[in-house]
Length: 125
Image (cartoon, rainbow, N blue to C red; front, side, top):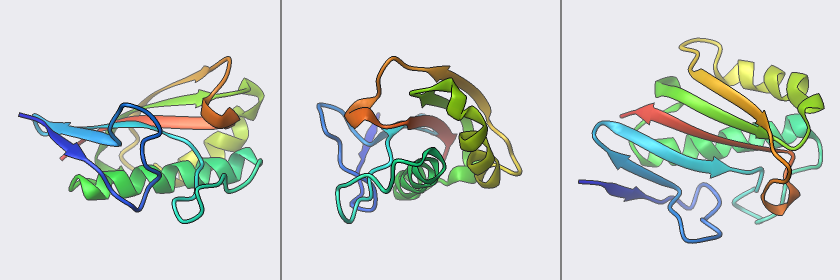
């Protein structure tokens, strides 16, 4: 059994996918980019500010699924430029100071809407 998760507190899916799917005690969150759900626009061109918004968006999706960032077990971070790693990592570390999840970070050739960062995650519910 699976449950489709959707919240207006995070950007809606811009394609044929769900914000998240909950099944088997886990929630699988689609990648979030730095869209402010109130405006539909990017918060900034700055990667640190983009990372902050991405993590706020993930938090909102997890909350809608009955979970939280504290329950994240795995993230994948996609960067448009690996040179942004330190700035992204500084913000990321504030959100995951305890209960650090497993993580992979990769440089992608291009991200949706030319975002500088996208993050997806898996959490327990």
